[in-house]
Length: 81
Image (cartoon, rainbow, N blue to C red; front, top):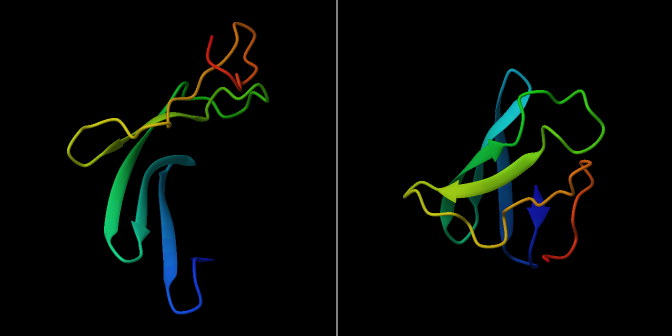
């Protein structure tokens, strides 16, 4: 649980299947559900493969700023080129 103010709270629940996060529910002043898309099924690699590649809303739209970007060798990119 993450507190966002003195009198309000934001609760985040992650749903997983076989160890892979597949959805995120955020409950606060409003409730939103997001679907998580992974770049690979394997989470055994330490290069970031298996991490969340993008998120979408229940309406199917991509969440702004949620696209993961990687170099050809698997390092996470911090800037877009």
